[in-house]
Length: 368
Ligand SMILES: Cc1cc2nc3c(=O)[nH]c(=O)nc-3n(C[C@H](O)[C@H](O)[C@H](O)COP(=O)(O)OP(=O)(O)OC[C@H]3O[C@@H](n4cnc5c(N)ncnc54)[C@H](O)[C@@H]3O)c2cc1C
Image (cartoon, rainbow, N blue to C red; front, side, top):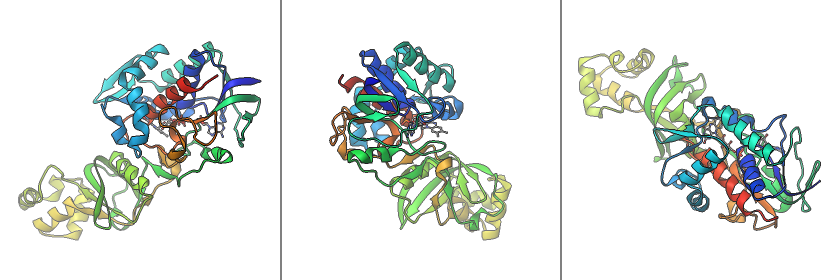
């Protein structure tokens, strides 16, 4: 059957684009590899779906601020709020993060699916596209335009950016981002399962690459938790160079204050008992213990598994896409949106902001 727009991938950006284009009376079809659309949406924000962020300059939280800025400026907080209301979703804000008012990711997916169905979007599940050529035919669908919205291989996703290679596009190397880090086991002794607040720094050849405050959860082969996820974002963008992580277990104290405190009380009075034990093994005097607590070094940092990452860093090269329409500069009628592009954002709703805004941008610019 002939369509105006074929959308490969029924995730966040694909469904949003389908709804937007169908409202302009374009005939749209979504081809989805899984047995239902939007599975990843259900996993977002621990099931609560951190849809967006009230940050007035969200583009600064991306690897490619100049590329994402035109779309994020045009489809800012108010436009996205209006889009969500138009599909029947009210929002709530908490510490700058925007969620569906229900705090249920399933309500977001249900609303998008219902709207797409109401608008007559053809949804073809169990239809994994494995090849894309000019002429735009895949499975039961022929189309004048194609949107590649296949996301990334992070967690349970499929990396299908290769489909655009048939049209002349290239893909940058892909690394897991917003995920755990593997480290040498030397300083992990006894810490498996320990969960602590820290300020964490990633250092490569003496240069601080990133600093994040948050939680660290020790694993038998590395670290997880929000601070580790935050560092992974920046390490991934640099292709995981040789690096070490320094943990500050007492960021509220200066070194001098901590030394003075440890002259009065034992380290067990400041940090988790297993960390205190490791610190005691490294040094016996207050000054030495303060130094280790302020700079606990984990060496040999490597990326964790893609199956544990929330996002992939890398994707289709941006220079080949128009940053306003997200149309290809190499192949007329071809568009890309969401994570399949070489776009990754920090934690805090930025990646779904991009998926939503880029989906709307394509839905508004495709011609019938
Ligand atoms: C556990 C987890 C939690 C997250 N939480 C948040 C959060 O709270 N806030 C936030 O901003 N971001 C979050 N993210 C990131 C966010 O989910 C993604 O960035 C976003 O979903 C990307 O949207 P997308 O449309 O590009 O891809 P997706 O939503 O992943 O959709 C891609 C779709 O394409 C389909 N597909 C792939 N290949 C093919 C093919 N060859 N043929 C047909 N179909 C195909 C896939 O099956 C999938 O349905 C989270 C990610 C994970 C894994």
